[in-house]
Image 1: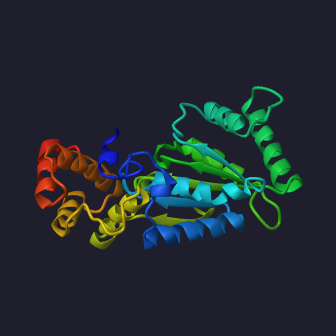
Image 2: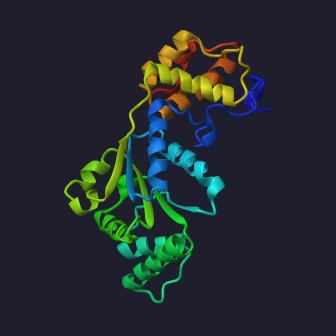
Image 3: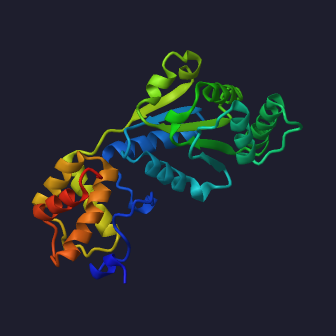
Length: 274
């Protein structure tokens, strides 16, 4: 039996996997999703989403993708989870594989031409919207940014043929500072910040309900929520990790609820890991 079944839950409420079903939409996240959806549907080109480690950027990208899954005939998503390729040619080679297109030769020019043909065929002839989503964008070398800038040049009189979404940590701003020809193409920049105390509680409650917790039952006390916020400062990844281990502590201690003391015991046992 899984530990969460002992609690009467159907699923693990605090899994570290970016499951869109468990993603809590605060007002900030909801606004960002709406802006991204509009940008994609209007084919506005380049959008940049920034946030510190653990603020939920990857999870948000999965939620965005799920929003368009029912329209998969019209919207084609491609993902680069780690853009740190040693050379420009390897970056081009990865793009060619992602787009499932065949270059006429092995030169950078021929790879670029193959990608261009793909975008024109899909975007104009087949009237599809091509979305390239890059996670860990802070790892993008400057030469790779130049390649992406060139791809954004492919357009009709009305719209861009490639919708580029870059999710990155805050240092991405320093990386692209001074690269004006890239920054000039930014349609939207959105910055995520940690959750406040109210949203921290709402996020925990949302994940528990999604996992199957009965509406009339509670597991965390008020002082537990306060202690969680004080320890995590509202970073979603830290909140999820701490809550998971707090549930384990509660079961080991044979308690029925998680209070501030359980949180403090959990934090002490885990040291600096959260």
